[in-house]
Length: 143
Image (cartoon, rainbow, N blue to C red; front, side, top):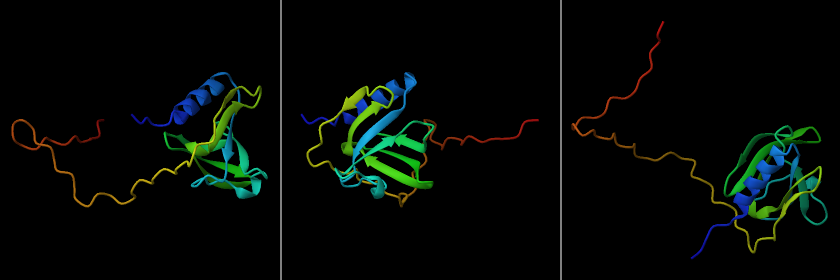
């Protein structure tokens, strides 16, 4: 039986643990993994970059089972970063180095983007047991 990668679950858990202990979470990223979007001028000669992902250093942070994305400033310029979970080699606290390192994934695949166009056919209205369409909720001003 094939199971999904445990990496995103460990990433979320370690991230929360680091923040709960008032430390600064950093991730080590393999910038050459397909789908990774980081400022290439800051990637080291080994193709890696260390990113500070503390809430005070970034904006619009989002982490799910496929990737980590956020906005961060590099040399005063805002960059949109996108890091597939397979490109993250480790997460650790800057203050003491505690965290978790990961083995590089064999052929990590970038996540497939969700379709950006809405469905072509509208969703049908559900029918109530009485056979008529349910009344839609509405808002009104109460003074």
